[in-house]
Length: 322
Image (cartoon, rainbow, N blue to C red; front, side, top):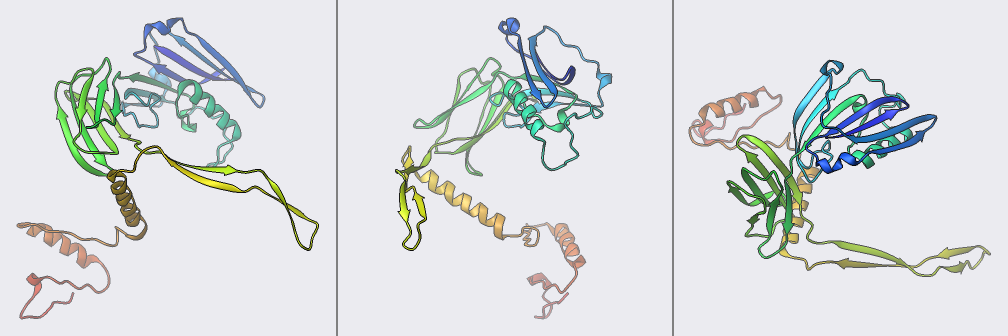
C-alpha cells in the first residue's frame, strides 16, 4: 500500500493510505517541500506492506463506499471502499476566523495535496487519516452504431445495471448477470448520459453517472491589428482592436441535441417560475379513501378560504364552502 503524509513544519496533519496498489511501486519514494510564509509544508510518499493505526487517537470513524463521481474519491475512474479516522480536536494552523473565504495560504496547501494525492482537501481534513481501496473496474464509451458501453478491469464480476438516458429521461435499461472483463452493453438509442452499477451479490462494487460529450461548440474571438482613432475636437487618441467571432462544431447536430435542449429549457422553467411548495396537485386512485381523508384533513388545517370542487361533496346541487 502507498502511504502519503503531509507535514506542517515537523508535525503531520494529513495521512492518505492507498490500498490494493501494485507492488511495482515499492521502489518509488517521493519527497517535496514548499514554504508558506515562515512555515515548511512537506510531503512524503512511500510503500509499505502493512500500516497500523491506533483507533483511540481519533474521535470519529467513517466507513463506506464512494462512487466515481464522489468529491472525496481521488481516483475518479474507479469506485473505492473508504475509511476515515477523524480528529475533531486537531488545531488548524491556517485558521483565520473567517468562515467565508479561505486564506491564500490555505489555497496553496490545497493545491499541493491535489497535485500529489488528487484529494479535495478541506479544513475538516486536518489531523485525519484516510484509507482508499480502489476497485479495478472501469467503463469505456463508444459512439458507434449502435453506441455501447464496455466494462473492463481485474475486479469485473457480478451483475451490472445500466440506464441509458437523455437528460433525466430513461430511454432504456439493462440488467446483465455474470459479467466478465470486456463486457459490452449495446443501446438501441442515442443517449447523452448513463448510470451504471455493478453488484457482486449484495455488495456494490462500482457506480458511475457519466455525461457523454457528443458535440463541442467552439467560439473563437480573433483580434486584428490595433489602429488609432482620433477625436474630431480633441487631441486624444483611442486604440481599437477589431475582433471577429467564429463558431465551429466538431460534429453534425443530431435530433438528440434538440431533445436535450428542449428538456433543459423545460427544467429551467420549472426551477425559475414554478413554486413546487405552493402548487400541489394530488391524484387519488380507486380505493384510496383513507388517503383522501388525510389529504382533506391537511387542507382544513390551512388558514383562509378554501374552495373544494368535487362531485362527492355535492349535496342537492349545492356546493359546500369550507
